[in-house]
Length: 595
Image (tube, rainbow, N blue to C red):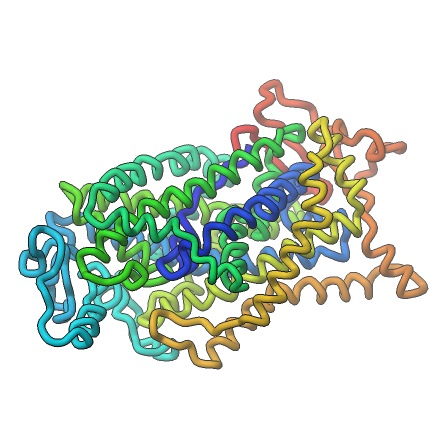
């Protein structure tokens, strides 16, 4: 079975405005609709796709070579995500190291970086009867304006000390050396854990997938006992039906589902390629998808109970308590940790949890890129030097992440998050679904799944793959374009040139699909364009299961395999937990049932 690291709600993806304070209640209904009709079906499709062929996100496109650009698009998306996601991990490392102190540095407003507007939960001067601030002088308008200016010490620690946030995306300022050092640490950890590939990283996932529940449960118990927690939870659960009609809410829901489940990254295909051929990936897809998204909802209860308390303390609405984007994970949660006894200990555990969750995702991203490179080159030298390929990818990721540790780094991180890995995921999944169902043929694919699992995909999935999922994705894309709004970070409006860069990043992954299609058409044999198109879209001779023992029915070979095919009969290992195989492009595959 494929184990996917569970992620908290939405972007970076530790938070986002969709599950953040401004859109939470309007987000729940679209979230579950997208999960049911897009998330789970496409999750199952990618798992079955990779498991059937035992190939990565490039090798699987022997099913229809003209659409191999979809695999390259997945690699581009994984590259973008891998660059900025490790920056989020490095910030978690920074908070982890900062928690090694008797008093958390964001607990009080008495630090040099704090402003007069700081209102700390633990500051005696700001607490009356244990929770609320003293009445504000002056008329109601003045009091309201003053109240809305209040900020928590954790928010000021985040913006004014950790980031030293600049006033513009073009003003990089200085590179924050502490963050740079933590970025180096995070990349070294990722590389060391992937030296032996998925065989080593897969064992770590068992711990990284279970430990977060312990910390979340502790925070939930503490959060619901705070004054104002019920208000925050009700804000989280109460539907705002007027926002349901906004295309951006549905687009955010789709983006969250695709990101949370890992659809269109290439990671699901890559990890599923290491499964045993007859592994029940249908069961895995349903269980993992529901568990993953249920955890996101559970984390929402935790954070909104805390936001409700902070809103009660500051005397403001829940929607005005915390930052959007990654600030929610590094503002609201740290604020809650100061309320626990022995708060530095719980802070260490919480940020250790974030590090583990981030590393689990990063393992998948890096392995996707490395596997795709090794499979594509496919010669003996690169198979033996896979460790050096992993090192090269890690070094490149570190160098490209340096600008994100500057004072303007958070602006660029959110720009990449909103554009480079947002609607492009939806486009890639839609094209993948259409190419498999209508180019390769749904009857052929259903027969492949039946040969692999012993039963065809359920009727619900067949309908979703052929009609529902592509239609929903298409209409969301159309209405998202119609109701498009430029990106903002709190009150900061991104300049036009920055938004243009964001669109270029988004297009850089999608453009791989038509460019490679044209390239494939030019190099395919055929006297007419129609004949070239037909030859470019039909499956390659080596498409099918990697092991000859699984190539039955229409995949059965009528002639002995030639050395050029790269297919060899491999003796089964006595221990059936591991079966060495050779893929159709000559790249070795170690199918480990524990992954």
